[in-house]
Length: 303
Picture 1 (cartoon, helix red, strand yellow):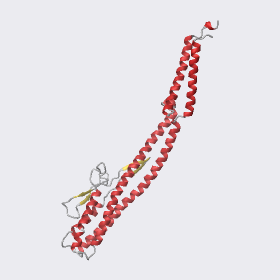
Picture 2 (cartoon, helix red, strand yellow):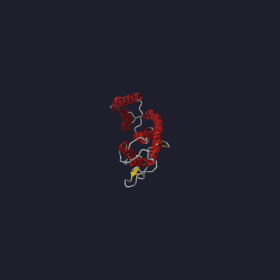
Picture 3 (tube, helix red, strand yellow):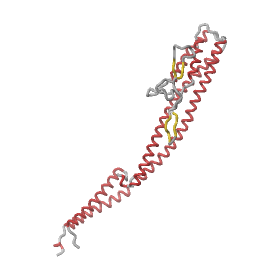
Picture 4 (tube, one colour):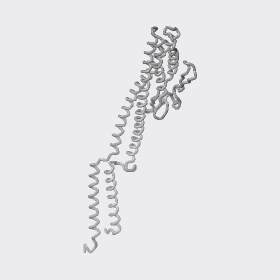
């Protein structure tokens, strides 16, 4: 059977193009390390990869959210712990002031320390984050948590101006974590502290005055109440941190599983690819050699 030259050339060209296409693909795979260069290479595997990568992105966002919440909770705990220290110092002063042997000068000397502690509690309660938002105002982050009306009488100057809303952060599938606490209730203690400061500031203050003793007892009881309030909110942080740690570990395990699966599906087997590349290169060289030899033949070679 005779084969026309045009048929032979078309057949050889087609064979050369197929080999060169496969070699180019293998070379690109080996350069990138990825088995799948375009979705059509392995459609089913590509769908699996898309799902795994989408899940991995979601898990990574959960992990980032957890890290951000842990940092916020840690900072909030620092500020609240400072408030606890201030209240502890104020409590010591109230216990001392309740001693009936104190002179007016003794009682007056406590005022500066109590004023400093009161102002420190007020300013810590109105702490802002790096974005200038109030962290203890609930969801009213543009408003201070505690307000001061200097024109009002002692005992009515301080008020809570935030709300009790929680800032929920998504940390898992259907799981949210409050990222804030409030200082609602601290205004009562600041007012009690303010009344005590006002009475202790009088030059003629009498340590055995029943009214003063009643004010000091109220302030002392208020200190214990406020300490319990803030300490309870600090305790919430400890529980939340444990939950966040557990969730972060779980997400880490899921992420590791996803990455292993992605690697198994997408990563190129270099040994197999190198063997295939060598085979196709040999086939390409053989095709060129055959093409060269056959192209040089004619009917005169067999006459």
